[in-house]
Image 1 (cartoon, rainbow, N blue to C red):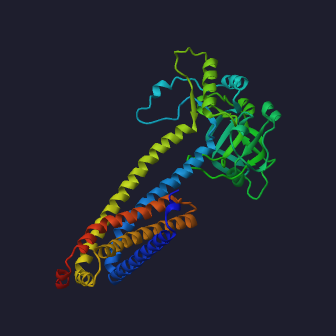
Image 2: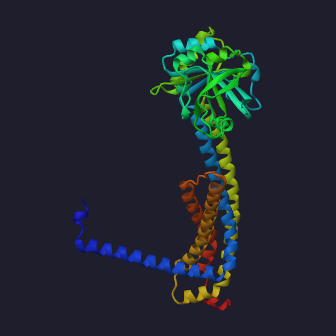
Image 3: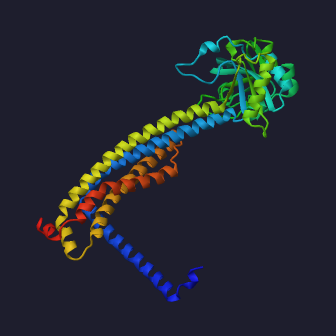
Length: 437
């Protein structure tokens, strides 16, 4: 409301004054930049040597952060495949370390078919529940072809509800096929490619557990993730077929019950229901400890976040130390630059150059050195990322936020490194400065 009280001529004067002030500042900045650029151009070797410390420091920081971000992204993708709303009922918890109390879990019972059937009847928050076993490092043969390191798995019908997968060809088991334990199988892409090169594997018969099974589907190629999980070498059988061949509750086969919650149910709600239901099935007293583990992906992500936090700190410390050394190098070079140009500074001051103009020259020169070093470090990181993507099919993530942080950090290092030399230059006596040569 006070603006209406100001005279229009006063407003016009203030606008013109502000514009003139901006123009003077831009002109001063331009002249200081040109002086700094000329000084750097005339001393190319010294400039290059000055850049090395900052370049190595920035490259180290961005390189470590990019490597950690890439590793985190890949592991996070692997963890997401396990399902953010999925809980695994197992004998052992997903924890470890030197203080792991294994004696508390060694005598626990394995998840059983009885547990599975009771849970299937009682759970209300589950979208799917599957009993699964797995036997690794098997050899699968078809005529003269064989595949080593195959994983034979057997699962109840809801396996398709708790795990995400796509088909290269074929289909999943029908409900009647799962219930009757029909001798059929779904195989991974690598097994199909190794056993049936240039052939359609659907309808072919292979031998598993000494029994002949017919292939009805092939999973889409996935590749192995960071946790070592992949469906490429899997042979999936109906659980009821496996029950007629092996003892599926045997500890050697790692039986587990996988439960996926409904879309509108949080993992904590599902966990609470599972815990209460499992304790009821096992008839545990209120004072008894659980004799089962409810594992979920948040356990892994919490441990990974802690690990990556340590790696981030270590990378920042190493890179920061490199930048600090580079900053001392920049400061040393700026002191030398001031000493070499003392005579020129005296002439500039005798011609009317203000102290802030002299100071700005050297500050801009110092900032330019650090920014150039930072940009060179970034370019090297991007080149390495391009090479890794082109030749090793490894996608390196360079976070734009880290790039902006690098620019800000380089500017700050330049200002800090160049302040004292620039301040000393601005305080020189013009007569003494001219006579110094």
